[in-house]
Length: 271
Length: 271
Image 1: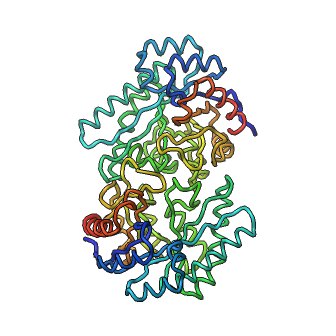
Image 2: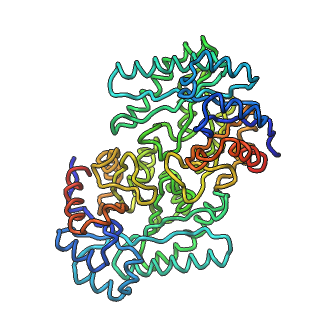
Image 3: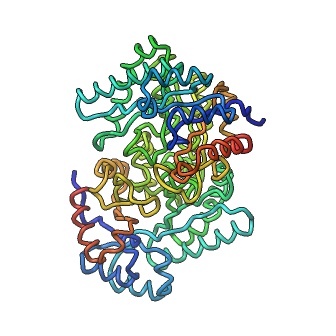
């Protein structure tokens, strides 16, 4: 079954060279109904003005990117991270998004187990605040190649286990095809995630990979079987917005309007 | 418990700019008792001369790198791959190595399950030949960032499952810290691998990673808790050679003698 093209959402990092205003205007011009907003872009205009622009545009907000980054060597640093996550929750609530995406953070030293424990403690401590603001916390497992510098949570199975251990409907998981496509246990993990999938992100894995961080390609340019993953996510209950999240310098260097045109075409063909 | 420095083995890719003769002479000069030999280096001298040089040196051969690369779109191509693996087994036997390392190969199209099935069929078909030659087949799970171009087998858990499904003492697994360090289920998988661990490889994961393929660093320069993984491997029965396998252009560009000196120091301190 083909994708509903109206589920497309622009994850703002795909047009990193655009301001929030330019991205909003671009979505309106290209009939993209939904946007995922990054916090460094909100900061450029301030929260009040960002909220005003989004409301005036009529766009939906699929998520705010990003909270997380829980592990840190000292208690005071870990508290600062929690405070920053609370601000992120407030921003999501203010912008009308019910999901804050969590990139959980790396271990400060070599001890991954300790890092994972701090992630769990961090998310746990945020749950009441997230409830009050009606914002859900989406644990996004990142590709294992980011385990050293971005996230100790590397598989959907691990994100599920974390979600289950927290025993809160306020916490769910995000499925991003770039991070999880390789996993031999992916489809079992998507089944186990049933009912708590909070987002679905698409891009592609091109060979050779252009870069480690800025390594994502437009859907159709790589090896990921995106429709198969999308259908598994749908069967397990997620029919919300599908964010196109492409972190790629060559795409950032192109005019944003070309990128939006291209992502719409590729979305219809390859998602 | 600290490492037995006499377990050190030079995986020949660490001194990629050296010929087999230079690598053998280097090991002798630096009191490194064991070497792992790559097939493209054997090919430069021919098998007979390679065998002669190794025997004359008195070095042990911890493994031959590499067999594998089983998936291919057509039956005839897959047969060619099997034939090539048989030659690799013969080479290992001839050089006195009881282990052929398998890098299993990527899926030719987007279907990872199909690729994995061909890997299983490929290894299965090699077992009688490997038995006759007294060479064990070591399935090496590769880091998930190589899933698209080098190996559909990406975790030790998956390698274990494959090993178990084949039900042959001729097949085991290789633990390379660079490929597996990030895995939340690593220590459980090492326990499940008990009795069929055929090799242990060391290097390190530096941040930022210098490159995707040539991305490995010398032990101590990265985030991997190597002693913890080594001890887990020992507890589960592997006390054989420990190969230093560093794929890194900057290290290849240095004089080989400096590399051997450095790897010995780092081995004693960080393995």
